[in-house]
Image (cartoon, rainbow, N blue to C red):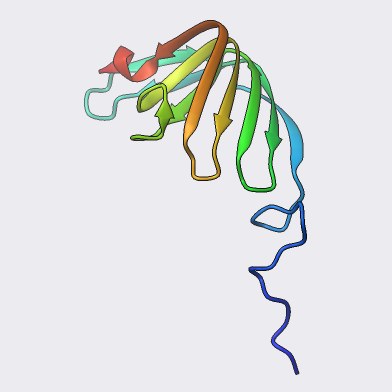
Length: 118
């Protein structure tokens, strides 16, 4: 009896989980409360925008966004700098398969929510 298919071998055009690339539409919450747990300071961020997200076979994603929407960026993980932002306007966002983020603002602004709450 064989051991079954090799999980590291994927059909062409399939992603890490064996899924084909896909496109999804999403919409943000009307308001998200972000709280500094050390101080209790908070900010209610309006993030009711929408996006079309292309998920590629290699695990990377491309977002086409009309904001505002929330975006979290990790340490040394792209632009903007590490933090949580309410991105408002029209922009694209590329997220690599390793999680590196690159925001390309066409028209709009990036509100640094972490700076608002210290």
